Length: 431
Image (cartoon, rainbow, N blue to C red; front, side):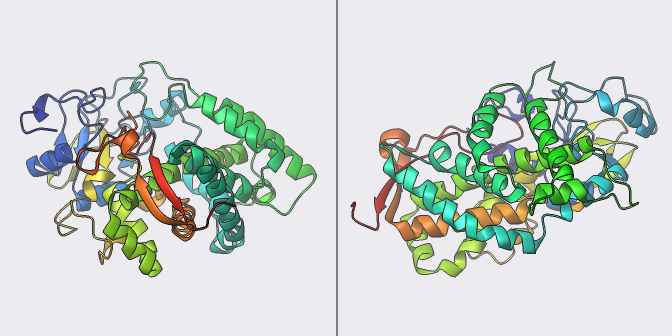
């Protein structure tokens, strides 16, 4: 980014100027106004912390029906000139991509489906899963360090995140590699963050089919796993959900949480590999690792932002927002609001209020997988520090320290590296 870049003319959604570093643009937006309408698609960009918090915690005013699609492919019918578009949202939301996923649902339907999930992702269940996470981290580090290239994303982060959530749910280990192959194939198509005018209405058909089999099987033959618990949990009113309702929840847990964890792991190891002093501090002070994870989430939120659709006219941060317009809450910008975080562009491993970040959202749609992502990242860092005497960023692949070259996810929603090649020195001599 340079000072010569014309921010007023910038197309954040289809352009590539902010992919490598969106933060100067976010800072410019916030200085102009914490809530500002961008010209290309009329999206109201929310970059202030308090303003973002206000939108996230007001689902009566801001619908989540477009939370992962934003201005693409657009709403099925015109919304301009309406005083309240709630009825139109209810009538047409089923025509929007991802409309059957919990992340796009509004209360009260959202409450019912989240109830199915939150009864299972309990601290007790995560604690029971932690032993497996430690063992898996060692197994994946063996693979990472045993190869010729120590590429973190494909060699560790992607399989690690997938196997953790598969084990938590109770997906048979014999099916793990099939899941890995199928998801890799799915990721090559249009999906979250796509700017395609036409988008698959349900890009998760394969997962739906597979989890339908699991849920039907668990209802016939219960086991001691989360899939069985999901299959048998009832809605708050006592009704047993249809199989497809449970499948949607299981699919969201399986697919959505992985991407966040993978990008978080990439950023965390990038920071450790790029800063020898920080790395040594974490080696000496393992108690700082949890706060390091929070500060990493604040500095580089894996999700740049979430969308909302204004049901009725609203005022946020003193800015009037008409009914029917798309609002984008930029987590990455809110997390660097100087009104909330001192020296916001500086990484501070011991920052007192790091955990106040909005990387996992807030309100009814706060990410239920946040505790699991924190656990996976903490365990991964601890084991990599245990298993190495040095973690560095590969100069061959990424250039020297003063001229690094990194490639980032080319979407307007996700934030994170596509590849991270590391130099790893084993703490144990090769056998």
